[in-house]
Image (cartoon, rainbow, N blue to C red; front, side, top):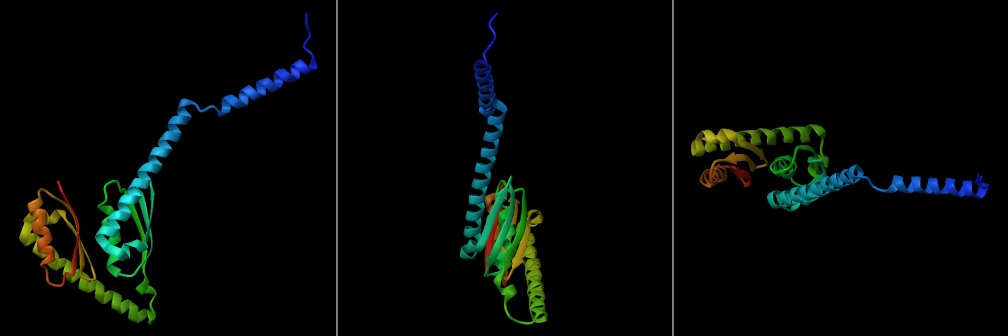
Length: 199
């Protein structure tokens, strides 16, 4: 009977350790599937992020460039500073209208909020603008009801500094056109942000 030499035992131990280490670094089907799933989610989030940035620029204009977008599994966080209060107020509405968005956390701020002036004066000015927005929102809602009837109840109207966003779905292009005209024709409306979809 041959007794293994210490060199042979050491070589066998090293070979066993090497094979074990190699086996642990070879990806299994499960680990490959997990890696591919993670990569697909990252690609999906990156595409959604691009869609959101494009929508913000198309709907809110150049001021939308101040908004940073971060997407994680469809959950979207908005940060940054913008010049217009309407951009700050309507950014969330624009993002909610992008297909694939699950939830929106809006931390966008307005540079005017940091403007000089007493806190009381800024608060009074802010309250007055909110009242004006609420009145205009009611006017737009009334015009929508007159123009498209019960379908107006399916729409979400948001107003900020005379800029109106319309979000929701309508059964046909004709009603969408009527809704946009009704909003644009409302006294005090400066601009309409079209977030409407046709079912």
